[in-house]
Image (cartoon, rainbow, N blue to C red; front, side, top):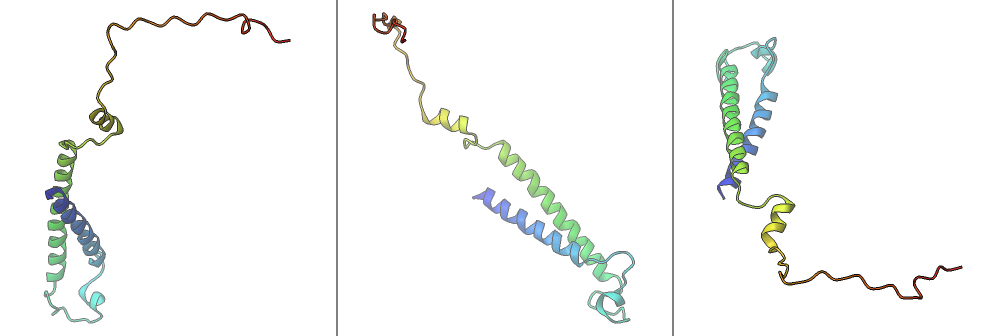
Length: 118
């Protein structure tokens, strides 16, 4: 249950990082070019949007990194059989061989089988 929640947070953080990186502008873009006007008095101020987006990206990157480490730890400490060999070992008990059984001698060849067909 907890591992599923970590997976969900991991995927949401990854999608959030992708979205925030796509929203951010390069160093050459200014606020006027971004919103189609020359005024810098937007929602976040002259450089507020850049700071908000870069800090949000950094927080989501830290969450993504943390969930990556946690999922790695979960996979290393898993008690569920993950390989085919582990599953077969846990399902089928080892076959026991009777200790008193003698080896079986091969059957003697009969006269018909020793003839070479012509």
